[in-house]
Image 1: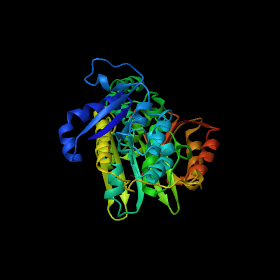
Image 2: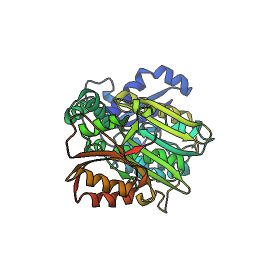
Image 3: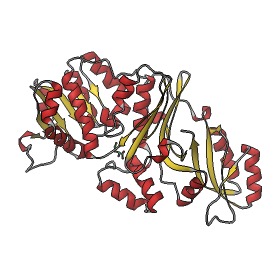
Image 4: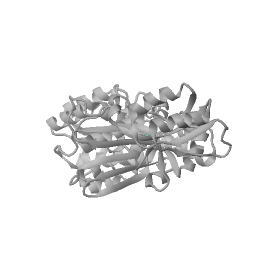
Length: 412
Ligand code: HSE
């Protein structure tokens, strides 16, 4: 009999326990032996659940119980999750987690400890909620060199953008709805400002490129500056605005970024709406492969946690499957080494003078229009341009025009 513990009984933790017991019979067939949850650790009081006798309030029974071989950590955040997971791995117990912050910050170290102790550290639920992406990326695409990954990696912001674009819903109303539905982070600025998507692209890129990519090295922008006018201009360009996390291998380094972007209507990513996530992986043998599904929510995320529990219970050694090295040297390219196309919306003192200045700096521009456009308003898309040069040029143009919108145009 395999005995496991669950740390955290919030949205994902309670979903994990629910899915585990709902499908216990088929789970046991897949493992080939019986399995049960012995402890559920949470500081809060829960009574009237079918699992009342399993609740504990301290970590000690779990770490000290030799019967426990697999632990699901679903509390989120770095502390105390990091101390718990590190000591569990050091004690020779496998750990599965949905905690993207933990994996993005401490993944290399925890994977190394798991390897040394011949146990497993799995984190399928940390990216894409219910979408299988970690294991397929590592196993099924392992014949490929992965050059590029791009994804809609945050369900909350995709839900908000969809509601704003198709239903004209106000930003805060859409955010409250996402919170009610259990999609948003405890601190929703992690969603809205792009940090959640950043952690996820760091995990995917670390796995694909074999070097730990730290969130602090990744330029990250959120969606709070997006306006209805930008959405109209984006429509005129035949595109949709999406929050994209992307990583691109460039020789021995990687360009990695999280930003809102114009995505062509013809791209598969443009049609991904509501809480759905999608991840495009470009392999040198496969070409583009897309993964699509619900990226947040109780049961989709619990599905990934429970499948990791099954995998960890079935394996009695470290698979040497999931692994990446720590990166002592900076692995992420600086923005002055990256080029991109940009959409810009300006309110000008003199529209024709500003247009002349813009064409002089950036060459051929695609001019955009919208219904109700102001007389002194100018909107266009540039050709591909160096990020740092564009920023310096924008500072010059700001002398005579106010920049109201600035969004990258990505070619996925
Ligand atoms: N807040 C996250 C999201 C939850 O909206 O995608 C899943 O990681």
